[in-house]
Amino acid sequence: MGCMARRLFIFDNPERFVAGTIGSAGQRAFFLQARKGGAVVSVAVEKVQVAALATRMEEVLVAVEHSAPATTEPDAEPLEEPVIGLFEVGAMALAWDPVTRMLVVEARDSTEEGEYPDVEDEADGPDLLRVRITPDEAHEFVRRSAALMSAGRPTCPFCGQPLNPEGHFCPRSNGQLN
Image (cartoon, rainbow, N blue to C red; front, side):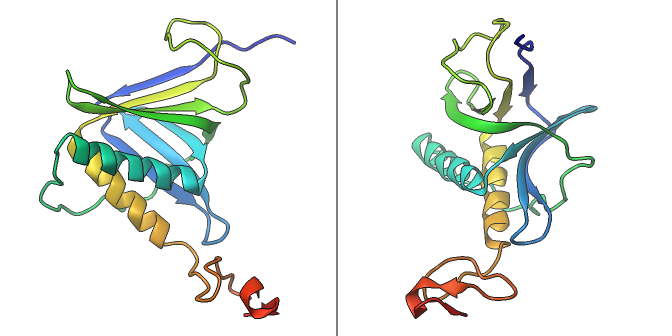
């Protein structure tokens, strides 16, 4: 079985880097999307990955002592269509570049097995999306991600699981439909 060449999607100072969804609450698919000029790249992620990335971004911003800018209107625009996930994200990494004073986000394809060197010119390895954003853009990513998390299905007051429109079988109420 032949191996496909590794694809690298590098966005330094993108015009937009957001997490977004397609679909209705309970059926949403989550994506990270970067845009610079005519290039738009979307990769599929899990909701928990978006939450973890936003939380980690906040921690890095606190560590580098960068406070949130004066609140501007948050980017509430939908993802740019068509949304075609180029790959499903398996591993993500977040780093602070002290030289450029930017955050570096890396999202790697989950379909590749094994360890690969962190060298861009390697022909083999998982597809990779790398985005460099300013601290202000990171704050915006965190705000938008928080709004995405709260826009999901309401949670059951008894067990904390998401409520479907038709209710759910709650383990805290002896399996009764709530």
